[in-house]
Image (cartoon, rainbow, N blue to C red; front, side):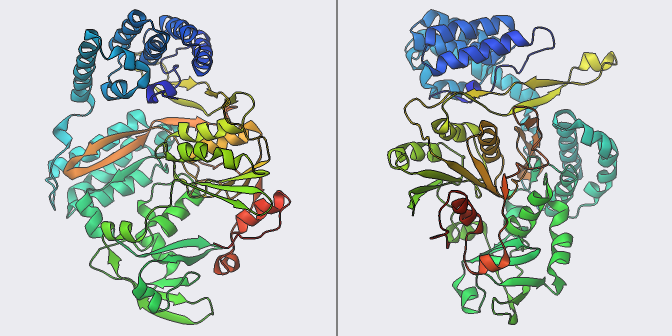
Length: 551
């Protein structure tokens, strides 16, 4: 389906308390007609949705797409112009959208693109001024440091999805508390550490401060190894430096100390204060997997280790720059597939960052469809675009299924001046149609863990709500939403989570994690034996012997 991001977002962004159901219901019916390629009917319904709520550019844009596909160019141009007037500015998306391809040869097309670009420039002048995009220097001027703190504070105050947390923290008081620390920061690296520490107070994995690249290279370098907290112990799960392997650092080794400190004391002092995390399992993953041993490139931490045989030893592990790390430790492929004994298809979906996972899943579907049962592994999936996962789930459905419900803050300055409380937009769950060309009817299990995050959690939520099968493994990271990105002085940036998602029925999973139907945690013994405990449990659930699960 060629629907762009603007069409994926439910067209209820501007729904108010009065008449809220009419536009939402019209949009739902229009989405179904569009999915069934009844484009003229979809055009009528999207048009009516826009007429019911003329402040919503998504409805007008959707109408233009449907009318273009139905062959009515006049209606398509009329509603595309209305979308621009209502606030649609994404010219790049419009150009790429195959739905609008029939309009490109018309002389009106270029004029509408120019209007989109002009409106986008006006919006950027208000919300994304280049004034904050200053050059990197080892020490930023004090004014720039204060400006960066002020921008982060203001974007959070007016956009953060959980205003109750801001009230509990007293966000304004924190601003005043951190001002002298920003002024006193002796370097740009130190300044960004202050901002990251402030950000971590929000306890949200989709709200982050990102230091400039020069700071990352100099102060957040990592050794060529991977680690994980298992049964309360820090274990090495991968070693990518032959020199370290030759010195006896192998998977299964336990790290008990770093630079003379007990390992957990080291982590709490050197890593935890700067980690933005939504749940305890998310925080553990960020500390002991994503950032463990990160620090200055010029330093090599001294590890106190205990080998799998129980023999203690010490060694220094050199840190490497980011380019070396990425070359030595490439990310897993977005999609992998193998057939296990007993006719069980094991599919790993490792990222929804682009369409690759869904495209390759559908390409392999004829072979997958021959399986007796299907296991979908999203334990290493950090997210991306939720629509990618929904395309895969559509092959498991025999009826439309619901996606996340959501809400965002509704800030109206006049209402505030009148003493009215801050409200919320509440978006109804989306609906995804079954894939009429691909259907898998057999048993399905989804594997999750604390590294299952963001759009992969949206995938798990929709699967769980479908009642299509069992989730096996550990709770997910517990963080999803729509981040707002913006620049900070010196070449850094930040993002703020602006949307709170729930199950379709309103149950919370942000701040909690999607809970598996069968809880299975890896053990130290299993990791040292290279056994995939979670996969074995899934196979047992399907009535299969736990074979071929060694990693």
